[in-house]
Amino acid sequence: MSKVEATDTAAAAAAPVEKRNTPLRLAVYAVSGALLLALPLFSGDFYINLASQILIAAIFALSLNLLVGYGGLSSLGHASFLGLSAYFAAWFFTRGGMDHTSSALIALFGTTVVAGLFGLIALRASGLGFLMITLALSQVLWGVAFRWSSVTNGDNGLSGLTRPMPFGLDINGADSFYWFSLVIFAVSFVLMAVFTESAFGSALRGTRDQPRRMAALGFDVWLIRWITFVYAGFWGAVAGLLYVYYHKYIHPTSLSITASAEGLLAVIAGGSGTLGGPVVGAALVMILKNYASAYVERWNMLLGLVFLFIVIFMPEGLVPGTKRLWKRFTGGGK
Amino acid sequence: MTTPALEIIDLNKNFGGLPATQNVSISVQPGERRLIIGPNGAGKTTLFNQITGDFFPTSGTIKLFGKEVTRLRPHKRAHMGLARTYQIITLFNKDTLVHNITLGLLGLRTTRWNMLRPLATYGDMRTEAIRVLGLVNLDHLADRPVTDISYGEKRRVEIAMALAQKPKVLLLDEPLAGLSAGERTNVKDLVASIPREVTVVMIEHDMDTALELAETVTLLHYGKVIVDGPHDAVVADEKTREVYLGH
Ligand SMILES: Nc1ncnc2c1ncn2[C@@H]1O[C@H](COP(=O)(O)OP(=O)(O)OP(=O)(O)O)[C@@H](O)[C@H]1O
Ligand SMILES: [Mg+2]
Image 1 (tube, protein in one colour):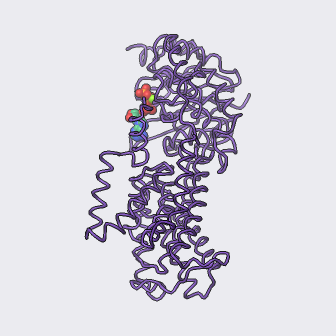
Image 2 (cartoon, each protein chain N blue to C red):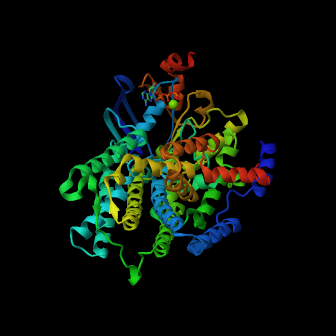
Image 3 (cartoon, rainbow over the protein chains, first blue to last red):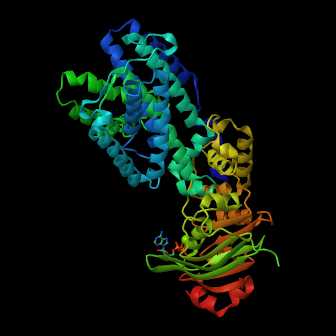
């Protein structure tokens, strides 16, 4: 006993467990922030537009990651919230005769309320049950978007939406829309990061790792999950707004299982339960989708192969996997 | 007569037709040290799971301090002063010891709903968590992850997490299981040092090791209470020998 304690004490003093906001981490944030800001100065419209789409996909993946990575709740229906918000914004603007502000607020609010209702239904289960219910609910929305043509314009989708002028700024150009998306992305990233690092976020991770113990400790596991579900739904709606402003068009495929699965793929490929992971994963998916599809006809197959490669060689995802390799090469790991 | 801290009345639990708890009635007074013994599969853990609300009974009543809790959800019982440990160690493995204990503190505080401030910045909770770790002589390992510590140390973290909640009723499910002789003495001393106002119900299936801690003993067998009463009477009872000490 005493021998064990002696060595442990020495090690305890030597090994502080994961310090937050180390200089390295802050430097990574600063450099990537500066690069992102300056991007339009040294690249053409094709890449700027790709970058905007990545930012939108990243907000979507980050919001899904709150459930998948931090809550341990794998959803295959998260595109519901992106799609619903996009449809709300487009419909109330083009058919409801509302201005941008009102239609955007309705989109955010309406989608969040629907997330609340979906959460009530889906969180009757966890694990595979939860996955199936989220999938089923999103399929219902997808079906409605397709069939209820009088409202949704069915397979033709809704067009005619223009981009808003936030604070009187014109965001019709590729550069200005990119900067607009970057600001929204930064706000989303920070607010989701604060959420996951908070006391509530710690409780959420606890419900992922030991739900029974958490309940026995006094945590309302169900309510913690529901709040997270609603919060994730809200950020999904934010991504949906940007999405519909970018494309000025919305089609039922945005509500499809493929759209949800792409988000899940981004989260898992990048590293679920980390903040950088979903961003990297979203970039990967969007780059493959936009860039590779020009050269490879079955880009979906390529995505599948890349994903397989990641799962085999970096099962924890690109961001944590790279960190692990980095530590090994620099001798930092034990 | 004082209100019992814990009262179980005619409790039954079936798992798909198989009875795991049968007509169990137990009353535990405030401050009592109760030992629950019985062979493997006697239904001891199942009884705990019903007291905490992990499973709801098929029939019967459970009361905490006179208030019926039979169908109350587990977290609400925790807020009434109920805490437990698990026979199978149930810790947050990737997290540090101090984080584990802090979750125990957080569960009963309104801070658990705070969505802005990081948990690690609550200095008061950290101080308290380290004090609690000190009770089980693990404060020197506070910042190590659970995966780094030994089995015996994990058992002590289990108990510390429950103690951190300053419970009124503490349920210990085989806290001595798998420990070496030296570690057993440690944990026994720890249990003996729990303040008198805490009601302690402890499961052990090896009678000898735990008997000295108990004032009253309940013997379960096939989900039924076979003998129930003061320590000496239960030990002396013929039925105890038959069921338990016989083999
Ligand atoms: N969740 C469950 N589903 C079905 N049967 C269960 C469940 N939990 C326990 N049982 C059964 O109930 C009976 C009592 O189990 P329990 O775990 O309560 O016994 P125990 O007295 O704690 O035994 P041990 O000393 O081995 O821990 C056993 O037959 C067990 O198989
Ligand atoms: Mg048991």
